[in-house]
Length: 293
Image 1 (cartoon, rainbow, N blue to C red):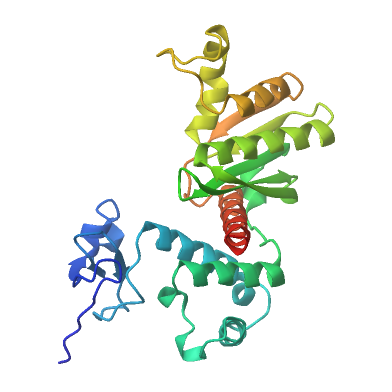
Image 2: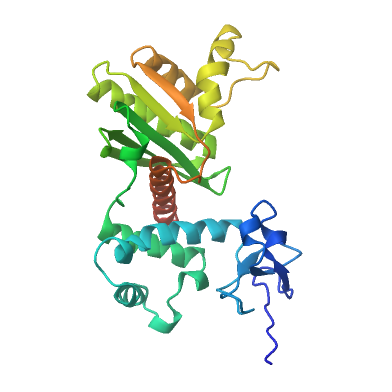
């Protein structure tokens, strides 16, 4: 029997083999799986089926996010757009200039994942989202917003909103910002959604759906108190991101809107699409920023 040794590329320490219960204590369905984990830095990777062979390189949080976004951008090419999985990976290996045998997202670093997103979005554009009809039996207009920032704080952020009406996507938009935070990205998504609603809905009622408590609680609970206290918190500190909150507050007087919080990454199609688009916008911005350094 061949002994497998996995070395962490971040700290050069050997990884240990652990059960899924160690990595995902809240996910009993994953407890039977095996993972390689680096104890000093917390990076980990899953194993092929019931074997002990790692699926790729160990990944810290930043790399895990990058891989997720790479899969979200690339997988629709072969799952939804008529290209076979084999052909899609051949195309990707050509674009990346690597051997097809080495072309596996699980083996990629952050920079390569960013390239996957760039190439895939150029070809596929915006991914389709299924399930809007299930989310909107009552009709009306919903806008799903999300923001992303890598690293947070101080990194490149991306924001996105997706408009759904009559059981289908009717519009979307994305943008980005330098030297930002995840909260600013969430605010920009909500702000741009309200601006779109003011221009296109003509007073029609709107529901904005966000996975950010900062947005939902800020609008429904904190905003009134902040204004009464001269834009200071209950602790007397200046409200962060006041510049964006002022713009949102003004738009709330012009747009008939309610805000609803949903848990992120819980299978909500609109929220998942906004999450993918915001992540892609953040990565594109970071690539452009580094190209100009």
